[in-house]
Image 1 (tube, rainbow, N blue to C red):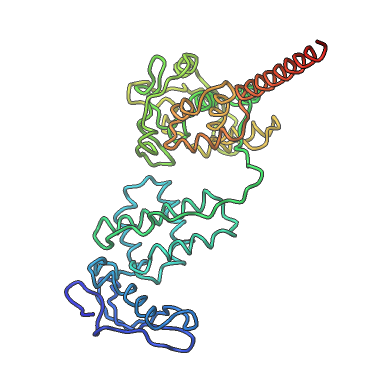
Image 2 (cartoon, rainbow, N blue to C red):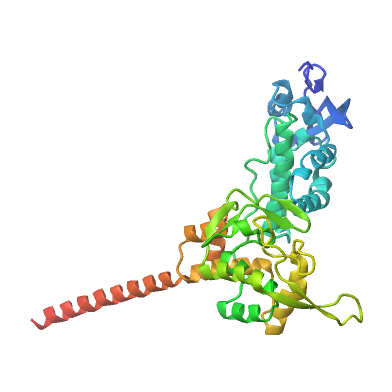
Amino acid sequence: MHSGPGRGFCGAHPTPKRRGAWWTLRFRQDEIVDGKRTRIRKEVRLARVENTSERDARRLASEHLRPLNQGLESIGAATNFEHYVNTYLSLQMPLLARSTQDRYQGVLDNYLIPAFGSLCLRDLTPMTLQRYFSQMAGSPLSRESKDKIRDVLASVLGSAKQYGLLVTNPTEGIQLPKEKRGKRKAKPHITPEQFDELVSEIPEPYATMVYVAIYTGLRVSELAALKWNDVGFDAITIDERFCRGDWSEPKSDASNATIGVDRSVVDRIHRLKLLTVEVKGGGPGNKAIRKYKVVKSSGPNDLVFQSVRTGAPLRDNNILSRFIKPAGRKLGFGFVNWRSLRTSRATWMIEAGANPKDVQGQMRHSRIQTTLDVYAQFVPESQRRAIAKTSAMIQERITASRAAKAGGMVN
């Protein structure tokens, strides 16, 4: 097997050798670290001798060397994974929202680099990656966390394919371990009655922010980015999001949409223009109270929800910790956050008898499965009615059959 331009092997027809209990293969292979191409000697175990004939060992050796010999692997695949991640971070990460960057960096630092950092891109075969994820079967990580690890790895290796370092993305087709069947964990939500109490305990403009969140299903980053030209007569358009200093596009194509809303929601939003709130002065010992207009300016490109003092974009974590969670604790609701408000919207639609596709459209879920995960927590009223009708039909037919038989016996 000869080494030509762009090839990564050296030596003529390397063959497997028996070393102890294993068939092994020794060969020379290129690796690229810090942009320098280096040829190194490598040895891999192919199979145990007791289970494999020499002929099968030769076939395994050919399969192992085939990708490079047939041009199915570029020389760029010799790039070290950790080194490529650094390149990925500089090229791709600036294109992502700040919150997404933080999540990606955490996954890379805590999971992917420790597992694959010393390997070359070409070593990340579908079998290697499937083995990694299959071993997560006993992990305490949630399904969502495992899915995020797979998504980040797919993004990194997908960019390697885009830049010509890999011919294919080896994460395609990788499956996560199935979750153990048991009691389904309900997604936290509040009832309409609890919502009414919660809003009454929260000051403006945050009460209206919660009101709009639960009546529209908007994510908090979408609420924070809402502008006056996004508010229609009976609809709201979502085309931006703001999260802790970072402006970006909506989460997905499905998220970038215009949704219908009840007129009461639009009326409550416009009511903010008339409101003035009282705020205690900042700093210890400062008890002075100042009045601020809730909406400083309501031009088409001005924010609907503005910082009370400065008119700047609101920070969702501050609102959550200072107003929403304390109100929830006071009322004895336990866990309340922005996500539970969004889930509550989907829950109420389900309880009102909406079908999954309508809920998916309102919540702007990219996948119907996300909607169905919320549906699975409930037995819809329509299903209860169907069960009752079925039981009544069965009983009616049984009664009629018994009556017919009794009549025949009398005759």
